[in-house]
Image 1: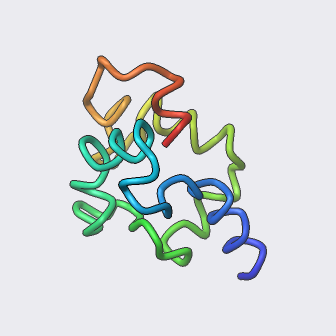
Image 2: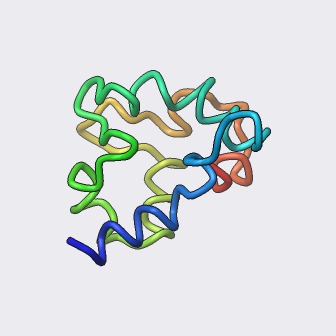
Image 3: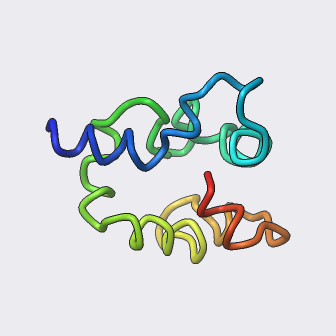
Length: 94
């Protein structure tokens, strides 16, 4: 569990900063991703709860990024979360 926690924290460290400190990735998260990932809507893994991410982090960062870009078949996660205007860089920064 410790390994998963460390990976998860390093993956989303920018999201743990106070909102006033970080513009950009935190704003993208708040505006696009938080709706599902803060509350766990439709089974989305919740931000800040490593146990929700345990199976997903086994894919590594590249796998998580691919899932965000291409979506997850059989889940509510659409490609780019349904926001086609997002760039790969914006998603990778979240």
